[in-house]
Amino acid sequence: MASSETGSRLPGAARTVAVFMVAGICGWFVMEMEILGARVLAPYFGSAVYVVMGSVIGVFLLSLAVGYLLGGWFSTKKGSAWALGSVLVLAGAWLCAMPFFIAPVCDWLLGMGLGVRAGSLLAAFALFAVPTAMLGTVSPTAVRWLTREARDSGLNTGLVFAFSTVASFAGCIVTAFYLVRLSLRRTMWISGAVLLALAAAILLHAALSGRRKQ
Image (cartoon, rainbow, N blue to C red; front, side, top):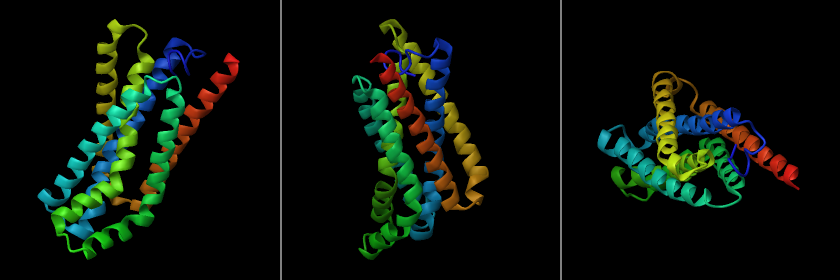
């Protein structure tokens, strides 16, 4: 999967497909969480655009910025596959657990009398900042895994972010048109399980690659 670390035993085409699949899956879940975020907060803080959507979108943008920085740092380390697998474990576990702490977090913030603006913003941070930042680490790491020569870095960056954004578009449409009608808990549990499975695949591949090199 990585050019020098986890993908050396994979054929070039298989490695490329695997990296793009990781970027696409995580791009899908970023937008899925963002759409579901409005549904999560609306029962507590209302559905006004300037309250819920402003808070959700703002938190996601800032969290992605943090994730991009972390991903860029991870990509410079020898154990980037282990790092990425670990953060995806955290993101998946967070999504699986989120249905259990939505109500306590939102009720606690409402009880503090902060108002809907501050309350929705803090709730969005508390609920979504961590998993969004973790998913944000994927694209910079994917670019590094695909890049063998410096001259290819710009093209690889464009391809990864374009593919991830297309996947985010698909996640947006499917979530907004269909998934919002389903059980919120079940959707989060399934999404978290998919991320955990993806993390397990990355960690397993990293472990097997490390053994082959010994």
